Image 1 (cartoon, rainbow, N blue to C red):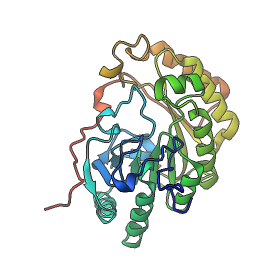
Image 2 (image 1 turned 90 degrees about the vertical axis):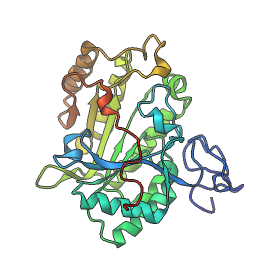
Image 3 (image 1 turned 135 degrees about the horizontal axis):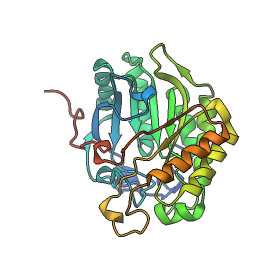
Length: 307
């Protein structure tokens, strides 16, 4: 590649799909994005892990579009790339600084890998202008290692998902049978960059990796395989976050599994398994979390320049 994310024919090769879309010419890739940065929300976010949100909130910047496109996507409103306001690299850097000014604990880049070259520029610019709080890269883990390497030294905390261990499940729900291998390689690179969890005096993570798994209805066995793999591979070098907040969306209402919520017993089985393995560095969710309150409004809050 002559340039990050651009193949020899001028098409996009940022993510594992390497779809070849000529985004600089206005074409949209499989991610739903062209070369213009679209941001759907930039605001304090209270619903991440306690060491990410803290009491003040995480400075979450939600990007439009997504290379993975899961059929059950909880943020479907923006993941297809249709919502959000177009911003420049300079404006994106300003957004980071504005969130810092609102006492955000970090800058939380939510599903921004398909804009990675622009993200890199914006982070460099913001750091030149005084950005000092940690940068969190919040990702599906469907990333190319070569792309992630361009973020080394710019990202402090990696917050990837590990969605599937089975290529068949990945194919059925995300049309990405290569997801398990791609995600495993991406997380390996993230841990290479940030191998040691670090926290400040308030308990806010300042460096490290937290790997999330959203338990899907009827998929406890596969979730256990993911937990076993992560703990066996990384032990206490990472934190594992097990989530039960899956919310059935209209697109999968008729699916016999995805059309329902995770049961209390399903989640208990997963937590019991994690405890039996000896996992101590982790997070779990209490009570009834499968509510749409976890899905923020995407009305471009904090995106446009203040009057």
